[in-house]
Amino acid sequence: MKDYLENRWIRTGAGLVVIGWLPLWAIVFLAAIGLWPDPNPNPVGPGLLFFLTSWPALICLGIGIVQVRRQRH
Image (cartoon, rainbow, N blue to C red; front, side, top):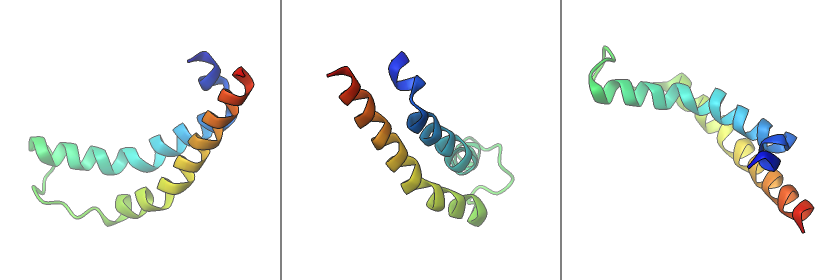
């Protein structure tokens, strides 16, 4: 696990996940448990942020995983 966390690509991908995905999932979670003012939110801004960071985050994580596995063998 330490090898994965030291990889720059994985850290970048994880950062994109946190910055891009967390706002949308926080709104969804808070609405589900009743703490969000609107029970059926339509978070356009966080949805666009999620959309724009999804593929770059997954690509960075994939590159990092491949690099770590190649270094091991």
